[in-house]
Length: 363
Image (cartoon, rainbow, N blue to C red; front, side):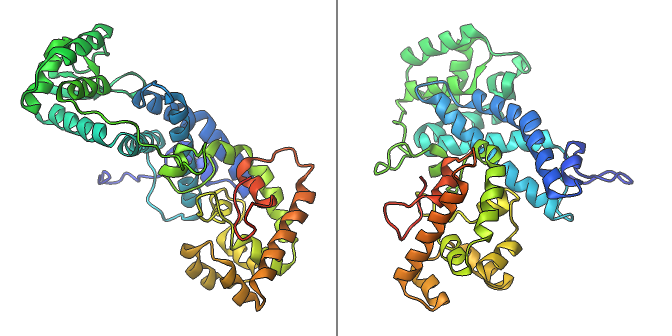
C-alpha cells in the first residue's frame, strides 16, 4: 500500500526499543519483553481459535505457538541488522498473520483432505452473495449470512449444524454450504461449518502422523518447519547459549571446526544457524571461530552441516581424527557447563555424545 504524500511510514513504535537498543544485550532484553508481553498472547489467541481442542489439540497448539515465536524472533533480529529493510508498520498485524499462516500449515499437513474442504468452504463464503466470513472473538473465523456479520458465534448453531450434517443429503457444494448456514440459523465457527460439510459429503481423514515412527515423541514443529528448538526454549536458554558459545570459542581450533560444522538435530538438519537467530553470534563471528573466511562460510552455509570427510579434508587429517576431535570437544564442554543451571534439550545435545559418534543428535 502506498503511503500518503508527506507521511513517512516506519516501524511500529512497539519495535523501537528493540531496534534502537545501543547493544545486543539490551536488545535481547527488549526482544524478550516484546515477545512475552505483546506477541505471545496474540499468537496464543489466534492458535487456540483455529486449532480445535480435540485429542492432542493442546499439544498441537503449543507446537504451533512455539514455531510462530521462533520465526518472529528470527525476523526481528533480521530487521535490527538490516536498517534498510521494509518497515514493519503494524507489529500486531504481522504477528496475527504469521499465526494464521502457521495454523493453515498445520491443517495442510495434519488434515490434508479436511484442509482442502475448509478452503472450498472459505471460497464459497467470500464469493457467494448473501454469505460472509469474518473474524470473531479470539481471532476465530466465523461464518454465516452477510446480515449477521459482526455478531458472535451462537452455541445453538453448533448443535443445529451437527444435526443437519448428520441428516442432510449431498447437493451442489455452494448450495450445501448455504443450506447448512440456514439450518444453523446464527453465526458459527468456520471449523464447525467445515465439519458439517464433511459429514454430509463423507470427507474425512485420519490425522497424518508427523512424528518420526523411529523416534517416538518427535514434535509437530520439528516435522512442519525447519528442525530447530522451540521459541520458548530458545528464549529461556539464551543466557545458557551465550555461556556455551563463550566456552566453544575457548576450544582448540580443530575441535571448534569438527564440532560446529557438523552440528545436527535429530532430523539431520543443521543447528549452527541457532547462534545467529538468537543473536548470540553473528555469521561473521562464526567464520572466525571455525577458521573459514566469511565468503567461504557464506558459500558453505546452505550445505551445512557438512560430513566428517569434508572436515577431514579441510583439516588434513583422517575422518577418525575428526570424530575424536568432536568427542573431546563435547567432553570438555560437558565439564565446563556442568554447573550452569539451565541445560535445555536442544543445547545439551552439543555437549552429549550421541549413539553414533559421527553425528550430533539432541540429548
